[in-house]
Image (cartoon, rainbow, N blue to C red):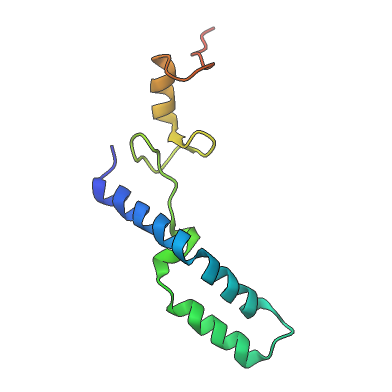
Length: 101
């Protein structure tokens, strides 16, 4: 199980990224538009830099919903490989069986 503080910090980052998503996209669009004057693009870059760092989607870490483990994460299932194996062995995931040969 991951530290509770790490999991909560990541949840906070998700909330901030969702809140600032539209604003960040607009500023990035202005900053990358070559048809606009350089001053306007530079001003957009400055406003983008003033936004909170944790509002960037790249700062969000994929973590297991069950344990909070940051590594060995399956995006489709939103859980780590270890949690997946345990739940599959217990028969809690429909259609998934542990193979043996």
